Length: 326
Image 1 (cartoon, rainbow, N blue to C red):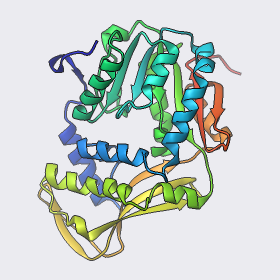
Image 2 (image 1 turned 135 degrees about the horizontal axis):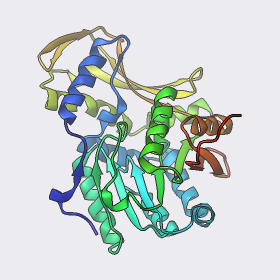
Image 3 (image 1 turned 180 degrees about the horizontal axis):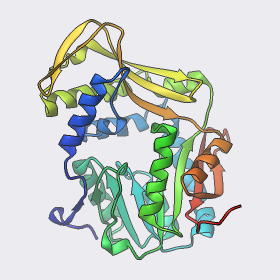
Image 4 (image 1 turned 45 degrees about the vertical axis):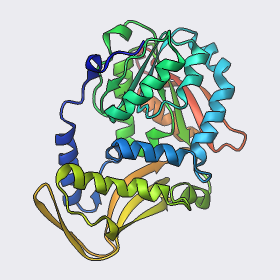
């Protein structure tokens, strides 16, 4: 059952302050960079859902098809009746497949976009009327306290979409450790990771012909103007997606097309033509890289699945008891 709006747990106490701090710090540093989590206001969340349906954007359809084929394999490892905790749930589009397969005892979607989270949670509650649904508005990059209703239940963390790839490696490790602490020893984690592949396929996926990804990227500037009193000329920027082979990642940037001056939260900034704001990374992982990352984050990989073309992989890992050396 879905809790009423006034009962929804909120752990993100000051999103405006955090947003302001990250934006001001990001515009002052060189090179300029703003964390990708701030893409996801309501409009940004809608645009991302549009991206997942684009013909160039292979990750969503590949992962969705893979999840539909591995359900019984997952259950052989996890058993049935776990509470499913989804980090960065968005529209929860892939979640019904997992909830059905493991016969979930409860569902906790966690997302930073409150309005979008509430809408998605209501839709999901209609699909599973007997399933307790406990939406949690939170930045899952910070320590998360789970609702009391699920703390004693065996848990399955769910982190699809290769969202882990948006983080640089040390931040990825920190996040995985935080997830382990939140879920507890004995919990399991089902996580999607995109694979390294040819540059052309990657760049098309993040710079689609219809310009939806460009709108998604530029919406960050619109949000800054709206929420932080910014005067950024959005039409003076264009979207760029670049494959950085050395770091095995796609980088998204907003590039100034002319010299500009603007203010944000009363502070003056200027950018020369050709300067960029780095807005997102999407790291890609080979099989050994992925397993090493999981182990570094406190998770022991116990199963791995990939599509026939080996474009995308899903891993199941367990928070096993710490073992003494060696």
